[in-house]
Length: 126
Image (cartoon, rainbow, N blue to C red; front, top):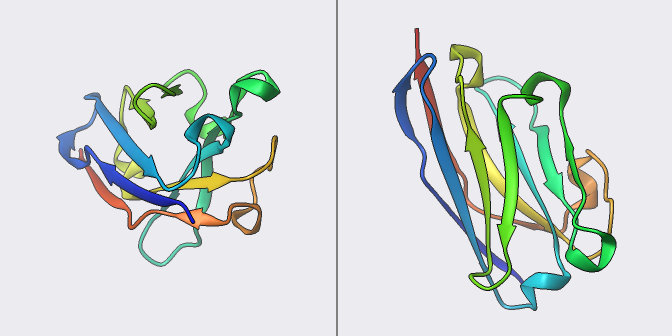
């Protein structure tokens, strides 16, 4: 079992930045592929970014709409994954979820991630 707890959300103005954190417990963190998803009101949950575990190269992959603005990273010593979000836009407003998969390169589908956090709200005002 994997427990994920997100933090770092909040209300900011457009153009600003936030850093989300997700602390994991219950399983060797370094063996997990970690991802971030988001869900805006009335919309489906969508993929944001993912980072493989180091044994799979630690590679990252991003949704097109965040490339150049968001960076996913991990600190295996702290069992934590981060999402640095810069140049935020009002359309980035959503609940952001941390997710974990037990294998490499799970892709962008929510079905491939077996563990989820409770989410943290990010609101970006114009």
